[in-house]
Image 1 (tube, rainbow, N blue to C red):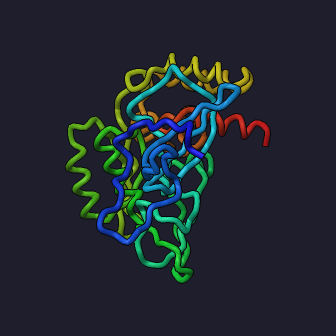
Image 2 (image 1 turned 90 degrees about the vertical axis):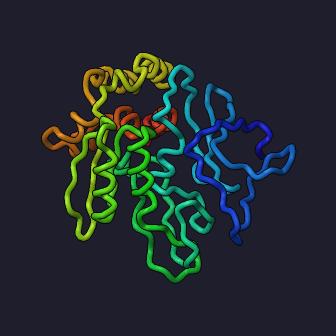
Image 3 (image 1 turned 180 degrees about the vertical axis):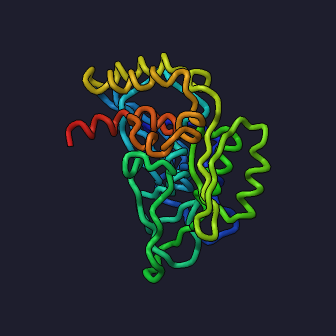
Length: 277
């Protein structure tokens, strides 16, 4: 199954469990039987690539998209949508964001609801069926930390007030701009970097990749949207401006995906799939 897979190291890869009773998953290296853990890719015919993110032998996301060889960026990763949304392929399998109690986790496909602005998973179902349970704030805490350490450009998270206040203090000097509001007993925060898109990303490379990866009628609007964002920043355009979150929700997929730090190849695949659905 995995003889053609190539590991692409990424510091976002969650650590494997130690000292637990969790059995490793079925994905193993064919040459040595070692448990697979990380982001793996393999080339497919017709200029396609297959990507799977695996934690301790369990696949958490699995998708195919066009090859886009020019663009790369440390703020963009196949792990970003997985860890921000709490994705699982099999809701019964272990995952980094699951507790050991019994609670049904809701599996989500990548780019659920065409990039929800927060990138969070849907609430888990009530307990009772014996499957693993979600740590309800695991993904929120991951998004908050990822923003602080430059692992994604923009995101939304909800935390207890004390944790949110500590995050505000840590964010000083990071170049992040945020908007916060109460959400019951929690605090909801939308945050993003004040750096311009042209400073954050090689937009010329990304635009060229989109133009090669998609038919002109699909690629050109996405390329134009990216080009128009050169002088904007995630913070000023999608946080402090009027109706910022509504504006973000209406932005083209190429912009939303890039702003969330999601892989453009997966975004391009979604754009192509949306055109034929």
